[in-house]
Image (cartoon, rainbow, N blue to C red; front, side):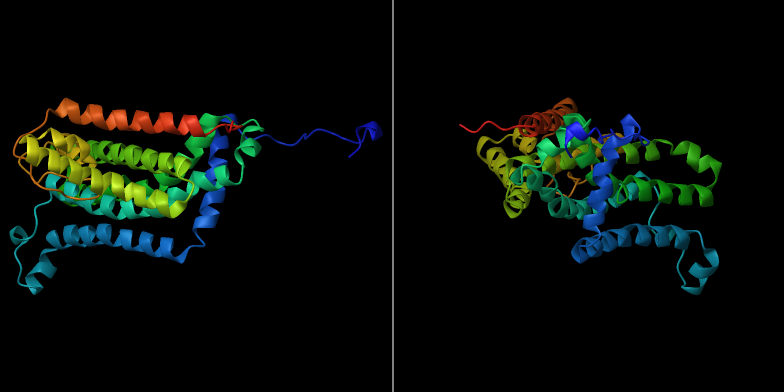
Length: 299
């Protein structure tokens, strides 16, 4: 429109609240994701685990039904911190495959098609862009981890009463903290790989490689040097160690996150576990800030 005609008028409609502008990205991303039948199938499979655990809780407190089945309540699984720890292990394993399915396609298309200048030319910062992409994975993983975990804890608290709830207040805190830790590590890693590897199958393969190949390399270090410091390369082992500390569990099979690796004969310090996990998150953020820019200089 020619400026000299003086018919141009700036937009005068309502503006989106600044703090919620990053939600524009997940809104349109979910519109695209819901068209994928494979993704919907994976998400439905992810809902089977909480349903199974809910049925277990219900059966344990339904004496009449247990009598019909000739099963004693004490013969069923005990509902304690280990019960919810196993729930998170199951859900995080399924969520890892969702991360490999969704994560590589979040940032790479924008970089391939030079769409970042269109985002950042608007009142939309790089931090909001990264937060918007991160929230896509965070919302999906939350529906698989801490949301069903808290619902199941509420169901058990309803049957057991206030006494059991007060005695086990550590469990919901551990559920949320463990889920948030897993969401941070896996989501940031998936986004960083998506930003640096523009071919989606290669980015998905690298995500599996970071978990499997690095874990195998760490196991080789442990075997050759007769040490346990190689577990610092095993993200699943580190995640499981942090989870068990949050739940107050000791002496369990080491592992967590997406998988359950081998038992460690020598324990690495807990502070090293937390330091490596947070260092990994910081490194992924640094990788994202290096790639998410309005302009790219090619030498």
